[in-house]
Image (tube, rainbow, N blue to C red; front, side, top):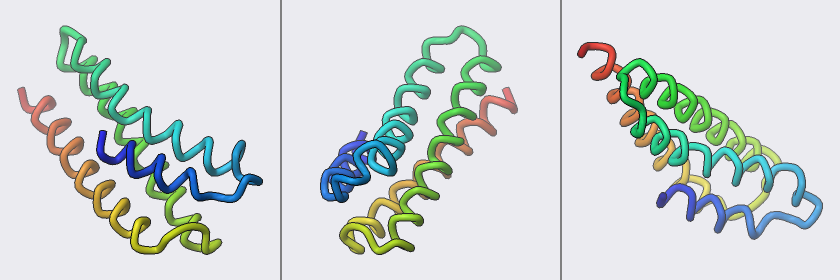
Length: 105
């Protein structure tokens, strides 16, 4: 949820021309992460839960790519982008570890 809040902070400072471009993609991918984790958590089988975690992980990688695009085109605050990239990396690691754990059991 902290990542979602940070992405919304980043997105609101993007130029108006990006309202239906990067801004929309950023916020959609960010919200997708906790939404898929929550939905997967409601599933009764580890296999189903893992499938939703895979979707969340895919959204995290998409989000990372979008933030890197922002960096390339020099949109938004560099410090905020770097802190978001750290959060994304941490979440990628946590989701991956949980997926491995579900595969073991």
